[in-house]
Length: 96
Image (cartoon, rainbow, N blue to C red; front, top):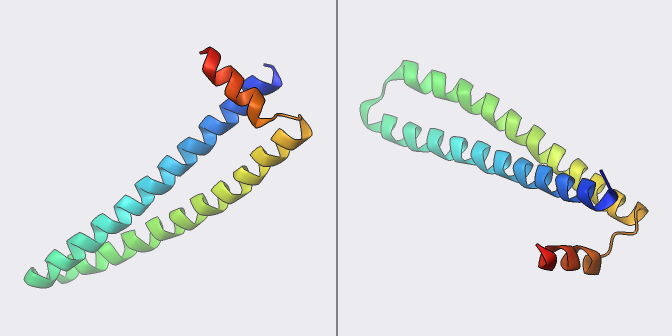
């Protein structure tokens, strides 16, 4: 795998990490919606369970955000170390 192919694969991984972050955020929003609806019916077991789920998802979101930051730096370092320019990438994208 040449350096451009590797860089493009790394970009894809970064997009997938972003998608994962968006998914975790969507789960947190959905939990909030369920908690709001539960205010009308006041089911204690549901409230407790949602709190536990929220804690786990929020921890996952923090880990994904940390991974995203770290991998973004890794990608930038790879680009710099391998002298990959935006012009090179643009040229390859236009050839496809």
